[in-house]
Amino acid sequence: MQPAELHARLLDAAERAFAGGDYRLVVELTDRILAESKDEALRESALRLRARLGTSPLARAALAFTLVLLIGVTWFAYSH
Image (cartoon, rainbow, N blue to C red; front, side):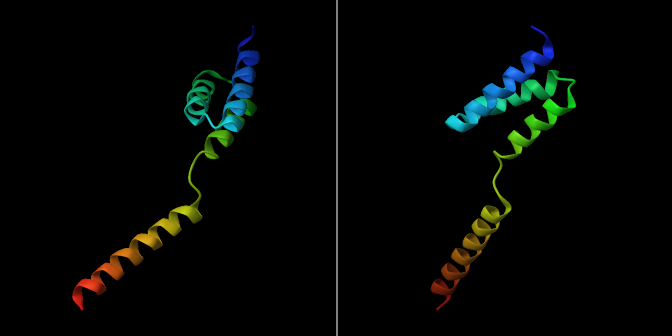
């Protein structure tokens, strides 16, 4: 089996793992593709799949807002 074919199969397996919710396996497979593959299209696809695992900026902003609100309400409750 050629390396390009192997990496294409690894990418397919990573996409199936993503659909199945096995994100640890997605990270392992995409890391292997990124480390070994010379094909830019495969590398780009692996990077895009990997980026889908990250948190969205909106979720991070909502978490930060919630923490600030919690601290503010707690401070207000204890100071009055």
